[in-house]
Length: 419
Image (cartoon, rainbow, N blue to C red; front, side, top):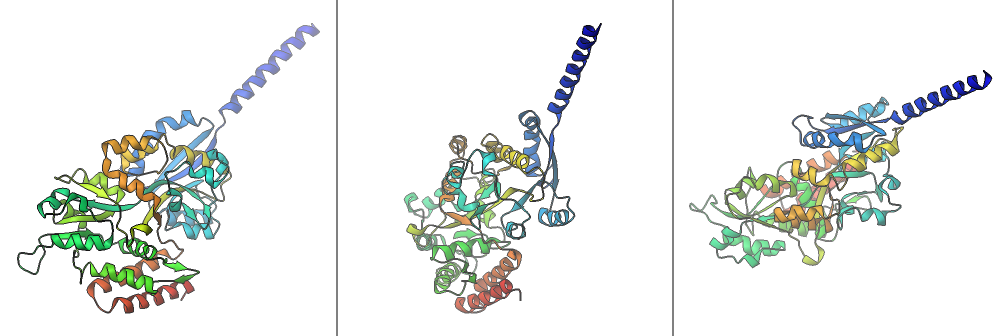
C-alpha cells in the first residue's frame, strides 16, 4: 500500500513538474515597439504587415507589442517622464542628441548582435556606413533607413545638347562647365532648360551646407565653435551661390524633381529614396552618379537616418535589442527596400540582386563610403531654420555671401550659448 502510494505521489509530482515546465516554456517577455506613421497606410506599417507573420515563430520567447504614431520625439519625451515609454522607439538622427545627452536611450548591446567590438560590428554593414551611425563615439541605434545623396542625370538630354556621356560631372566646377551648355531661354528672361535642379526648401540647405563645409576641409562645428564664417566656408558657399548667379546653371524650382522629370534640367541632386518614385514617372533613359565634390580627392556628402533606439528605462533591454536585430536583419532588409523604399545598409549579397534590377541605386550605396551624418544637435530645429534663412538671403543677394555667413555664424553661436 505504501509502495503504491509513493508511486502515485511520484507520478503526480512528475505531472505537476511537467505542467509547470510547459507553462514556463510558454512565458514570453513583452517588448513594446514604437514605429512611425500609420499602421494601415504608412511605409513602416506596410513592412510590419509582412514581418509580423513570422516574428512570433522566430522569436517564441518574445511578445512584440507594435504601436504606430507620429511625432515620436514629443511622445517619447512625455512617456519617458511618466515612466511608460516603450522599450524600443523609432527616432531620426537629428532628434537623437537630445535623448542621448539626457541618458534616455541606451548604447547598443554588441553581444546581442553576435559581435564584441566596433570592428566586428562594422562587418554587418556596407563600407563606410558607420559614419552615418556614430554619435559622440558611441552607437545608440540600428538604422531602418539611411538616406544618401547623389546626382540624377539625363543621358538623352546630354546627347541632344552635344554633351558626351563620358562628361558626367564629378566636381562642382565640372558641373558648372557642363551645366552652362543646357541653359536655354526663348525670351531672355525665363529658362526653358537649365543644367541643374536642386532642392532648396525644408531641410535641404542644411544637408548641402554641411557637405560643402566638409568638402572644403572644415565642419559646421569645430571644438564647440560654429564655422560658417571661416574662409573655407565662405569660399565653398560662394561657389554654391554662383550656381544661381555668376555661373548660372540653375534657378529656383518649386518642384525640382518634376523639372528633371519634364526634361527641363539635365542634372538633379536628390536623395536615394527618390529612385523608387522617379522610376515610375520618368519617360526617358536616366542614370545616377556620385554627389559632386569640390575636390575628387576629398569626396564628402551628407546622410541622415531613422533608426530603432532602446529606452534606458526598459527592464528588458536584451530582448529589446533582439527585436531590433530581427527587424533590421539581412533577412528583412530586402523587404524594407522593396516594400517601402527604405534602405537598411546591411552587408550581404541581397543588395546585388536589387542593383541588378535597379542599377541606379549603386552610386547611392557607394556614397555611404564618403557620407557623413547630418548636422545633429539638441537645438537642431533652430540651427536648421537659421541656415535656411541664410540660404534664402544668399540666393536673393540681399548682401554679400561673406556678410550673410558672418551674421549666420553669430546667430548660431547665440543658439549654442542659449541666448
